[in-house]
Length: 272
Image (cartoon, rainbow, N blue to C red; front, side, top):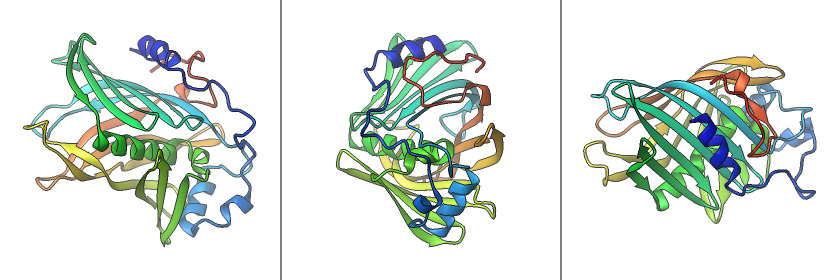
């Protein structure tokens, strides 16, 4: 799956390096001054001050996944690449049904369009979600990735920050004329503990054609220092439909796979 991810990522035609119009200047305290107190606390915890702005990242992780509360957890592995040069998120997730049947999910946002493609053995398509709900959902997931992994990628004109209180702030991003938003909760250090949005759409496991807007959260279990950066130790993705909370993804991040400011085709570690 890792080789397939790298090969297909390189073939997408995404920008390989920033042009002169991209602001890569180090983040200063003055850049943080207009932001809400909780957002400033968060960015300081993430050690962005004094470091050049990031334009991409790549990360691998392992974990477990399930489609409903009635189903058992299944082991999974994933790789993703995000870039702000032509705002895109490329996420590959592989699950083994019954322990041995590989199912590959491609969860992508590029050129203002979201898509969720699911293929058994990467030969037979069992799901291909497109349209406005996926455009919205994938864009807010890009925002979630940035808040948790690459905060400096959010210090751009397309992202707006708003005050809520001492321990939370709102953040919104606009791309291709579409705006999504979320609320970020932080602890006394400024470390994010949760991300909450209603700009995602839940597909009923009993009726996949039934897609409705739903509250979605990504609680974080803890944080670890990776060089001069902070990375979540692990985290969950949780749906909150009327019938009850569903934690459906539980990931542990691989620090050795983390790379910033790399082109789509750059070599990557394969430990995850």
